[in-house]
Image (tube, rainbow, N blue to C red; front, side):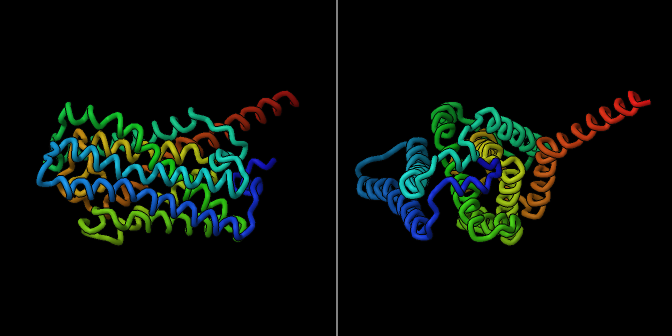
Length: 309
């Protein structure tokens, strides 16, 4: 069995009609079944608006849950498509051998969480007026279990779809990795164009570029690591931090974070800051390892040379 991440697609049945049927199934679960909880909640809210008053904190909580449920349906749709239509083990979307390392996921998440914390703490220290303390212990503790459950589900579902199913599936048609990375990242970026941040930013183009660049980054570390584990951890940590620790005033994540950035961030600065974080992350997991290996090889060759003398 090949250890190549893209070659994992060969383990399944890949007739064109299976992909057509799978995409229909996945989109139906995500966009149709996944929308039902939100539609029901909106209908109940409208019908009971004059007779039932829901406290704001519970209304916010319910909205977060019903929106997040759509990603549970997405995850279920991907699982059924993989196991029922492609006749393939679900976890091979994460690793070709199907053996998933929770430790690797945590490593990726921990590293990205640290990079985000350093970035935001530096900004808060330099320009504290940009941030407002919005920590409400009761509301935050009420939300925390839900954020810890639903956010990883949401981000993992997106990773399995874009960096897993789409990236591997397209490799059956095109072998050029940059093309695969580009297409999957453009689709990922398009998914986020409806976020309120896009309309509020001073530069839609730069923010769109950031979304696409984040997709490129996740795809590259997936191919480099021959595994989706780092991308799953990185994406989950990113959204968990922005949901529970620091959120933007115009963020799509309507959660009671500890801090709120009350000014609209400069999209150009955000883009270049992301590039720095991505480079540091890549160095920590890949470039640094290569340097260590090269140094060890140099030491071994030097010792052999002394022995021959």
